[in-house]
Image (cartoon, rainbow, N blue to C red; front, top):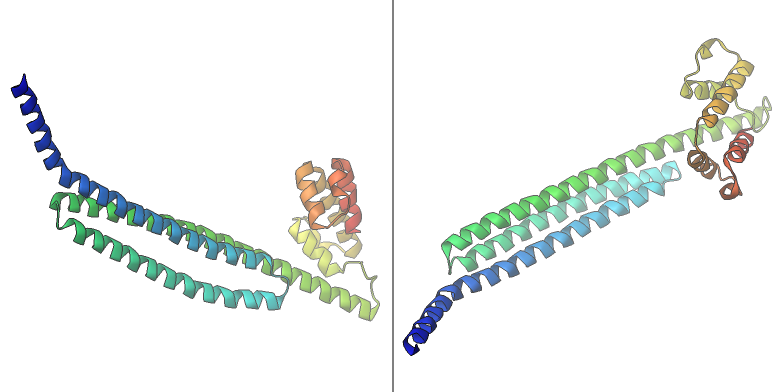
Length: 249
């Protein structure tokens, strides 16, 4: 009995001594992986913060000067993004090199496996960052284009209004034939080229009315919000349609 117990203890001690380097290596592996994952999350957060700041800047554009400032900011952001990516790639390389150096003193096979895992993690993290950055860039570009279009349209409307008020040819809120034609073109009204001003106005109002009838309450509420219609939250669908029609007159 005592001999069996001694044999079991000896086997246990041998197993423990053999496993000790593996345990130490695994602990180091976990620590290095935690370091790399933490760094990648910090890098992803930094990219997100930069992208969100540019997206917010795009929504704050109200004039041509704001648009020019935004483009200058985009150029600066692009330089910042490039520097960030270079620094992150360099840091990842340093972490990977450190991991290889530490594990080279222990088990070569474990070191090789860890290096492969580290490379895969780094590649996956880089792919995710690039995908996220690309998506944010697309959204920012879309926001810029939409804002630029809106700014140009508002500038044209303001110029036309000023011209009407100066010449006295039209009432201050009455659209010109050119504006009515642009609206007819947006609404894809057939035969618009042959219409006079009154015919264009009637056709546009009819098309806009039909367009409103096809919208649900949520879509109508968004239109009312864009037109800054007061009391819109308490309106039902029919009331929203009537309020939007009145705001266009």
